[in-house]
Image (cartoon, rainbow, N blue to C red; front, side):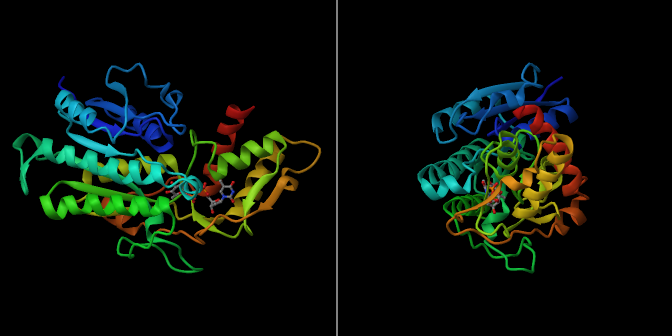
Length: 337
Ligand SMILES: Cc1cn([C@H]2C[C@H](O)[C@@H](COP(=O)(O)OP(=O)(O)O[C@H]3O[C@H](C)C(=O)[C@H](O)[C@H]3O)O2)c(=O)[nH]c1=O
């Protein structure tokens, strides 16, 4: 059987590795090339379950390396690119924005431009063997900025990124958009809300709460803990990406959100309550919650209106926060204890 080669970037990271596993479990006619630089946030053990499958190949490398990308396109004649690779941690972007601009902006351009050169003769002239070839860019709801107490982000919400991270992702979204409008390239972008679930890096809020709680350390909550995020279970996100990748309209963007708005203090209390039940000790884990200095430029609230992907493509999240967080806490107990 002839397999379709697809390039997945950043597949050793949290969302990318969950997506690769999801795709390989659901498809037999795809060969995935996973290009990952293995920064501090990439973990090859995230791919233990599939690393020996013959329709999976790992390549260590940087999306900023044009020669490497060119060589990969020549070798594998990719029929699609699904682009996860990014510097993603907002706190790091405040301390050191350089890598964010390089990887998220220049790296995305590099990949996109190489895909265009490989798939197209010139503007609006796609090679016959690449009529279906698609570039799927994975992005974030942080590009829309911060909401007040009410309202939801839709695909029409104007971009207003506030951190160097979100500004770098907004830039990359616009570069991707321009390749549709200028060259007629088949691109699609998804903007997701906060993901959680197995394999997330230790630095993010939910793994931090679980790890610090289990270690008997202070659980750091920035500011007053009232900031709100819209939590999306990573497998629900993977299902949404798969739908958009296969059925989304070229040039369009789709928001993917969990419809699970929770504030950070609620998240910490909920996790502590689960731990009090399944890993009880002499006092409640809640006593470890500690308010610390706020993040600079901390966005107050993110919340997504996912009606476009629901109505057009039939996507729906299977998990609500309370079901998803139980599975997640159990997964991290196995990891940390
Ligand atoms: C690490 C940490 C975070 N926080 C707060 C800061 C936020 O209000 C919330 C979540 O923080 P986290 O850094 O886990 O995620 P966000 O800054 O919302 O961004 C994440 O979700 C979006 C969609 C992406 O696009 C980012 O790539 C991804 O990192 O908890 C704390 O209070 N304490 C902590 O120790």
